[in-house]
Length: 445
Image (cartoon, rainbow, N blue to C red; front, side):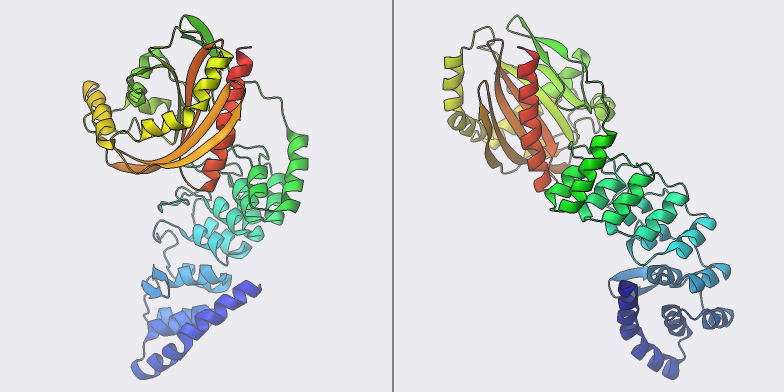
């Protein structure tokens, strides 16, 4: 309530002086209409529209551009005026830079009455934003959960909003966003209505992980308690066997959401493998598997993973002593590798793409940032880096978690790539890469 009142005061300070003067001096009925919307005066709104004011006229207000009187009423949570505007022909389905009015209500001062009015007039409760950035494809419920708007969250759920909807880019659910923002009441509402407390993002994060990383201790304790109660014994992903130096090596997927691409598709992602290595397994998100057969955007993936063996040493046994020597020189060797001419590396990738008739997917690399050692243990050594990569004109930062692993006396190089979004990406890569190395070692004991 205090927040809503503050918004009214701010808007009033912006509008009233100029509105009064303009109305008196120039008779600007449209400005009078906005003044009436701010102060929730339905009778004045009705009279002004009947006097000829355009109910759908667009205007700018502060940082808000190209908005309508109905947008302003929804932003303020003024349900009475909003209903009057709708009754007199306001466009409920208008688009506002990729958002509809349900998104606006969820983001600002929406309430139950406003939400139900908009839904009753045809707005899709699960409509997706078309804005760019983190909020792309967000539904009103995702927005409300992220903003901690309990009343809007409850009303949207009552009207059958998908409580476990996921953002395609990150895999975050409304519960992820509520947990990240520390919104305990909204979190409780979501869980009470069937939200999956153990849902994983594309980076392997649960709502509990986000609550902990943001320092919301009380909320984290709640999620931990409920998560343990709801924990199921999920069937582990199948572990496939691949041959390295004539020896079968079991390679589990890096995460439960990834799948091995198969022999027929490996050639597409093998272009990312240095000429002195051989690819024995490649993993992508299951939902991205069809992409690698499409020449237009087949190589633009948010996550993928590679397992390689050195061609020259593939059939040589790697003893514990040999492995110690390899890891001892790993930093120097890794430095030598990434200091190769960027132009030479790009030319090699693009030469391979041309051989696969993928000329339009030209590759370019930016300046690499090294993350250093991620972990060091018996038979596994991990390091990481972040590199800007351009594929077919699309540029993104890719984080890499890499590990040198010794399994059944064979040397493996494993690489886990994820599109860099924030520091959370680095934390996830560190944990996921080490977990994957441990899983490979365990599967080959």
